[in-house]
Image (cartoon, rainbow, N blue to C red; front, top):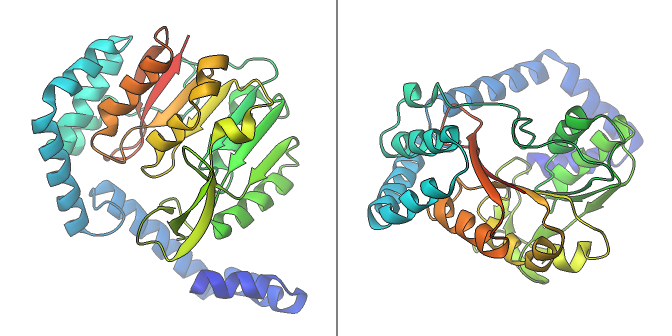
Length: 300
């Protein structure tokens, strides 16, 4: 509701000044500081951004999946390219079964998506940014290889609030060759319910209060030779990969795909990637001192 009011006010010249003045006020600064401190606290204590109860339910779900599919987790570990990937996966599993920050101290690395020990910039990059959010991944891409080196960026962001911030980010940095797509990523073109939260946990959901158009990478990006696909879309990664099957087989782009949203993603996503391109080398890296932000990387 507050986000909707703010977006409405920002449409008009004089009311937009009120929004700006509030942000600069003491109350506005205190609210931002409270949100930042609260978010940090929740992350550090693994409260899963919502509540302790949600974290416990998530832990039980993961434990049940792991106990039922232990051989699948072990098979993924055997597919990984380096010892640090196997160490990372084991530490994440151990943490999710019995959280303790000490278990992750050795394996948390940065930056997310652009690991130089795995990836290198290439000429005429065509980057598919699945879950573009407010432009953080595009900023990361610029730091990775320098501004303007890419040929094109497809920035997918179905959340209207996030998308308005994404547009502002691109304008502020004077980014060129960015196609901002108001769609969610899926295996085909359709309409689905969506939870619009104006944050990094907006997602496709049957209980979502709004409806968005979703489409596939194969449908939208087919005319370009895709070189890099990043997916962090709150549990819809498998559907998005199915919708990119033809391009992945054709172009063999580098992949950076989140695998932490659903317990089965830890093994289903690596298996599916290897099925599409058997010669891919797979790596796992973890990027936050809690259960979030585990990514599988696929390169040739």
